[in-house]
Amino acid sequence: MNPLPYLRISRLNAVRRSLLSGIKDDETILRVLEQWGFWRAGLFAHDSTQLFGENHSQSRLRTKFSPSQ
Image 1: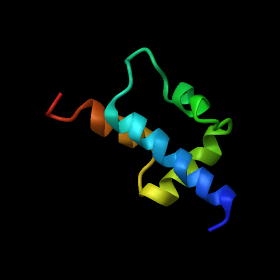
Image 2: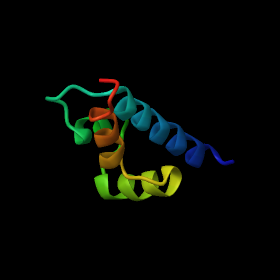
Image 3: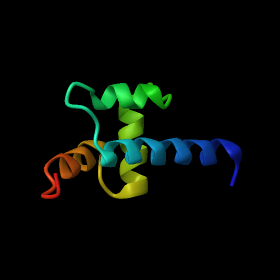
Image 4: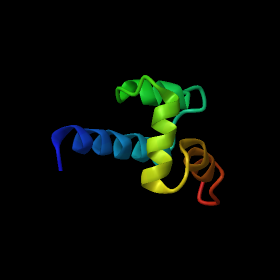
């Protein structure tokens, strides 16, 4: 695998981990994306859905409303 796709997948995984671990109510998904260097939310949404089978909003909602919290 070339370095650029590897880095992109690594950053996608980092954002997903952040969302699944739970982010503060006053923190936005866009802010998390920016922290990991994603400046185009639409492109991130496409790549994230392709890689994980769900978009970032679904990941956050699933975590936010899980019975364990």
